[in-house]
Length: 111
Image (cartoon, rainbow, N blue to C red; front, side):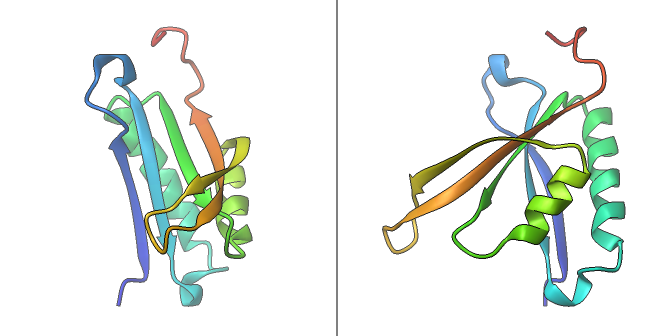
């Protein structure tokens, strides 16, 4: 059974999006509240920066009560940009997404 999952992948192969990554995070209920997720997320951020990412973004489904994920992203320095409704692939329903972004400390050399 999957307990934790952290991954950063490029958002696109297009040059204009070079250095922009999409973060995927999953934490099982029995791993919450132990500080494990914060430690792993910090490692993910550090490793993604070492790999050349200068911006990380994430989309969080808010159709379920997902306050833990929202709080974790805020703790890791993500800013929440917008909440929007989007058609989901599953069951052809609209779900609310919270979109957030985190940039490294100095992005002036990247832009």
